Length: 85
Image (cartoon, rainbow, N blue to C red; front, side):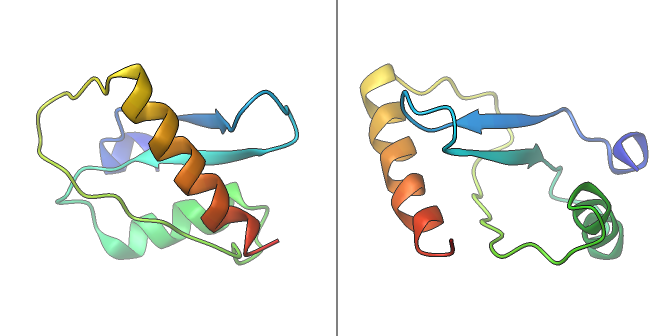
């Protein structure tokens, strides 16, 4: 599915210094089939429905976030993730 969807990157984001605060991510092209995306997410979550899916939409260009902005973005994501358990 990763090749079929044309996924360029995926992995795990670690929030802060605490190694237990982490979440998986997938970078999916805008033209990816929603049914394939759903299939991949369910497959990656061991056939369980994820408690939270966050979609961040941006330009098609590569974007390197400045470290301060990245920290703020990461802290905001952590707050959202903590609300889902």
